[in-house]
Length: 306
Image (cartoon, rainbow, N blue to C red; front, side):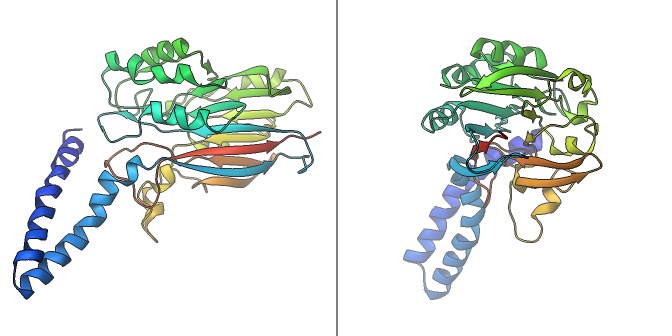
């Protein structure tokens, strides 16, 4: 963690460096001007990834048809976000901005796909996520690997207390029979894959004919869901879309073993086709940078089977 913080704070040295480059450009001779301009241009890329893109909160809208649905079928409008990673990086997208942006989208429900934290102080957790209480739609949450100690401290208790204060519904290894915009739904959840405590036994008692959403953190969970559990759509995060979306090599940064990257995947399993939607996250791990993959909230219009 010390090295990550060193990178975070050392990055501020770019500003005097940029000032020196500008001095060369405007006060130096031709050769110095060329050198200053070249150095400034090259350094502007990591500077943009450090100081600008992590603060650019975007919204991506998509329409999904669940199995058996059509564009004329009833629909719900949901917000999905994940990986805020509030903690040691002060340039992570604030939860307050995320909440305000979601409230402006007029959604029926909100899903938070884990990794809320990144090495915060346990005593700060309640304040870090207090803004979630101001969401205008019901919130469903699971935790991610960083929340439960893989790696870092296990912040489960502190997060459960904070989420309870916000009115969120915690769906680890259980299902909730509920209504979203007047439509009966089963919202289920799986605990983090790396924690090795996933339990899908709740699926044996789910009513037939009711659409089932499965919220989890790691989309690789799709590889281990029992064939008998016929969920309609999995919602996940974890990948950050690579976080640094460098052409040709970004996939080497994806912390998954399956075929998952971002957005909608149609995953063929022995139990049939599975729909897996992966949000690219709003925060950062490893490096305090995002490049060509800005923080994002996914707004999904989900058509339900009739």
